Image (tube, rainbow, N blue to C red; front, top):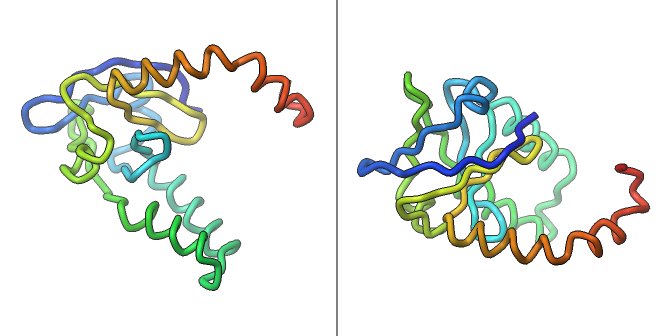
Length: 145
C-alpha cells in the first residue's frame, strides 16, 4: 500500500526522485497519467493492468462519459522507467498539465502515487482539512472505520 506525503524537487531534466519507501513498491517501470484535481497519477504496472481490466469489463463504448474518461486516463498515460537511483522522467505534456515546477509533492494514496504542484497541494490540503469532519460524516455509512 502506498502512503505518506513527500516533498521533492524536479531536476533540470524533468526528473523526480521517488521516495525510498515508495520506490521499492513501485518497481522498475511505472505508468504516469493525468489525474484528477490537477495532479498526476502514477501506478505500478500491475495496478495499471488491473485498472485497464476493470475498464474493459465494466465499460461501454456507448457511454459518452466512459469514452471521455477512458480517453483522458489511457490517452494521457506514459510508461516510464525508474532509473537506478529511483528517478522518473515526467513527460513534458503531463508536467505542464499539472503545472509542475521545481517543487512537487508526492502523495501515496493506497494503490497510486499522486504528483502535485507544491502550492496546489498545500491549497487543496487546507481546503480538505476544513471539510474533514463533514466528509467523515458523509462517508460514515460505508463502514470504513
